[in-house]
Figure 1 (cartoon, rainbow, N blue to C red):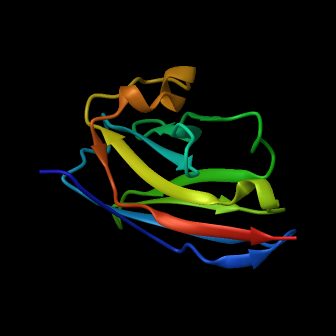
Figure 2: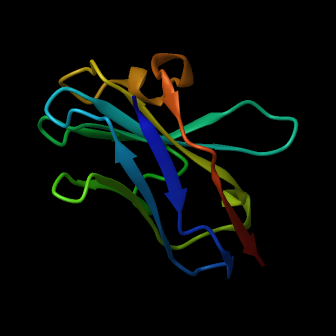
Figure 3: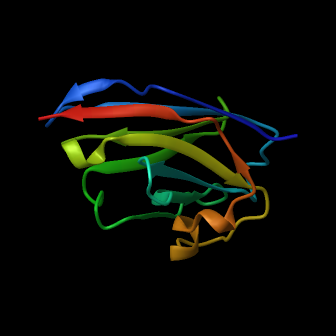
Length: 129
């Protein structure tokens, strides 16, 4: 059974940094794809970054490219999202997601929430101007 638990959300000022963590259990790290998504009230869930655990191939939404970095520590069973140069428009609930049989390359599919079968409960990020 897959369990995903996010942490690290906080309130920060614009230009600041945060690192989100997702503690994952039940994930096979040589075949899974994992991703970070965000959602604001009344809007659809948006893909932020995705990674194939087998080779670390990653893809980013254009809105975060160059500012956010997705990474994994397989020894700790943890997925990370390092966020820097934060903007007020980055304010959202951030979710971690996983699919056990992933894609072995950085495809835009990794940014599609429909691709994932397992979700965490989310962690709130608020960026003030």
